[in-house]
Length: 415
Image (tube, rainbow, N blue to C red; front, side):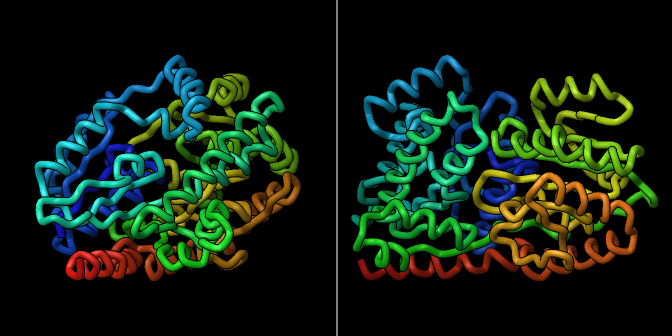
């Protein structure tokens, strides 16, 4: 099938959750023999990766994008006039609209696959293709985005709470509209399916639910091999895309509230925080305790840091979808501690694959317990690796997407 794939990001290298998900979806579609034309926003530091995408895509088209706080304020004001979410206004760039319109009017696509919330606006009400048929539309929802804003509300400064509440309500309505307008919607966890349906008016949710599939995020367990960790390590590592507020919030909570309790019980414990563009308070904490806290920024290869660490912590208090960093920890046989939210949508058992705690004292206690028990580290690592291989490898889990595309082909042939 001929697919127009719309992406908010250049999905390479697969070094962050959204890129990992999208990269494996593109690989899978190509492996199944589909012809994929990619239209994506590209940031200044991403252009060098475009040639790699041409290895899995028939064609790649990009629109430059550059974020700025000044522009963001303008988009926020515009969202008040339009009633649309700020996220939608932010990415509604005329250059992308022109590109998508040109591609749809000059080429014949069977499917439009809109990856992530903000790209859906370019796939609404598509024109008939050259065969006189309307392309089948797929909304690939990485998250129920409204629930992220709603969860951040409780931990946000009071001055931001009205803005988060308003944005959550707007996104909720918008996502509810999307799952009614698109032919099919894909989510990664059952909780996000339920959350999206909350935005659908009463009486229409049952029909909309029939057009939603749950397809988990995948990782590459051939590429991500188990690491050999340093015996008797007392280093704790954590990582994430630190420009993503829920990631920074969770790591900040661990740094400020949990880690001091761990140090009180294990003074030799150290912490390594990995991620691009670390917040100023993370950097300051490392400057104040250089022998205890290390903030690396972005690193191209996580392997040396995993080998030097006793375990990984995935402290999540807000967010949606699945935590790719936890799946990658499993694939690398890395023992981990996370929260209930961090484990959402992952078929892991607490105590067998990962340790789970939600409050400060509990998270500290589970981390110390794991640090002191090499046998438990080994068991969690081995069980996590088996789980990743059997349930979350991209060549296994993405087979569920075949049914979605079979439905698209059936609809097109019947039209």
